[in-house]
Image (tube, rainbow, N blue to C red; front, top):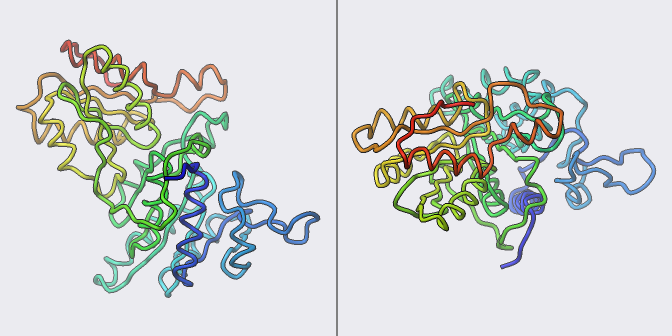
Length: 342
C-alpha cells in the first residue's frame, strides 16, 4: 500500500469525491489563487497547499476563491448545501470561527430540526487547529469541544493520513453538517493510504493498541502521542489499550466504556484547554457509567488553561506529549491521585 502524507490524503479525498459527484464544490480563501497574477494559474491551494491542482482539473466554477469574509462564504456554503449542492468550505483556521459561528450553530446545525427532519444540509467545513506550528495564540487553538457541544453538528478528528481520507469522504457524503478538523502540525506526516476511495463510518472508534493495564483515550494528533507512550510503556512492562474515537460527535461511548471497564484504569489525552473539553467529557462518562470497575481515579492529560504561547520553548511545554502521558499512566498504575490540569 502506498504511503501518503496527511496533506496528500486530504487532497485525494477531495479530488475523488469531486470526480464522483458533480454537486461537490469547494470554496475558501486562496484555495485556487493565481487569478490575474503572474506565474502559474493554480498558484496557492490554500495557505498550506492542500487544494493544489484541483482548480486546474475542475475549473473555477467548482473551486471558488472567496473574499476574506468568513461570515459571507460560510453563509454561502450553508445556503448552497440547503439547496442541492454538497459544498466543502475551508475555514482557514478554526480560530476564525468567531466571525461565522452564527451561520454554523444557529443555521446549518438546526435546519433539520426546524423543518421537521425534511431538510438536509450536506455541508463539510474543513478547518485547521492545534499548536506546534509557531502560529501564536490566535491561530493555534483546539476548539473542537465547542462544536461538539452543538446538537446537529458532526465533528471529525483524523489522527493520521489514512483516517483523514476515509473520514473526509464520509463527511462529504454525509447529509448532515460536518466540522472536519485537520491538525496543522500533521500535514507532512505519512501513512499507508489506499489509492481507491473508502469511507470510515462516523461514531466508530479505532483501537490502535491493545493492553490489559490502562486504557488511554486520545483525540486527533494526541493519538500519535498516546501510541508512542504505549510503545514505551510496553518496554517497561505496562500494557496499554489506546482508543482513537475518530469523531467526537457522534462519540463511540461503547468502545470507550468497554475498554475502560476491561482495564479499570483510564487516562484521557486532549490538546484542548482543560475546562469543558473532551477529556472532561470522557472522564465524566467513565465515572458515571463504570465507576465500580475503576481501580484508580481517571487522569487527564491536557494543555494548561492559558492561551497558546508564541515562544517556541513555552509552546513545546504547553503541548501534551508522550512523556506526560507516560507519567499519567504510572500515576494511575500506582493509585496516585494527581490534579487534572497542570
